[in-house]
Every structure is written in structure tokens, then in C-alpha cells.
Image (tube, rainbow, N blue to C red; front, top):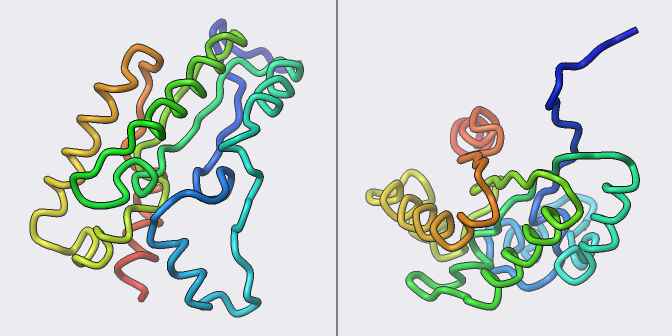
Length: 169
């Protein structure tokens, strides 16, 4: 029989672009709309998690999970450079509160393969000043959500982002 240590986290993870549905201004959404996926697939409404996450959180709780990792869609938070979407921040805060209310530990990924379209148009992470722009976003969203989360992941699978976003293109 397997035994896991006390405090072991049993959880699941989401990806903002693949779960939330419409309302973002990220580079993947733009790429899909331009028809770059051979089969023509698009995330569209995805799981419509932006409006209906709480029912999924109930399922997670009922399964006995004690952790959930969510990602923040930078393009939803900052659709134009320097323009902060306070309603989106409030929704993310409410999601984290909902996770905590159900007795689960929230974890937040700051970059899960998407960033704002304006950032992409400037050259993404290859552009001069990109690290500072990302750091500005990261500092601000962590400050906004810090009371609801204490575990932060900077980049989801940074090796995949680097390889397939910049090397094998």
C-alpha cells in the first residue's frame, strides 16, 4: 500500500486559455482566429470557467482534492499595455476565495503559454524590455492577489515555452 506524507497536496490544474472562454486579448486567441490550426479548432467558450468555475470547484472538493492550480491570463488582466482590467482582477480574486472557501489550497501560475497580443506584437520575450514588462505584471498581480494565495509559479513548463515558442519556430 502506498502512503503519502502528511500535508501531501492532491490537486488539479487549469490553463486560463483552455478553460476560461472569451474575454482575453492574448496571442493564442489571435493565432487561432487567424486560422493557424490545421483542423480549424478554436478554444471559443472553452469550459466557460470564467463564469462557471464554482461548480467545478464543488466537484474538486467532492473528489477530496485539497489543492488547485489556476493560471492568470495576462491578456485578460492587461489587454492594452498599461491598461489594468480591475474587473478581471476581481474575478480572479473571487476564484481564489472560492477555492479557499472549499478548503483547498490555491496555487497560481503567472504565465501559462499566453501573454497579451500587444506584448507579442512587440516581439514577445525576445524584445528588449520584455522581462521588465513581465515583471511589472507579475509584481502587480501578486500584490493584488497576495491575500488569497501564497504559492506562485512563474512559468508553466518554461522549457516548453522556450523550445516551442522561440527555438523550433
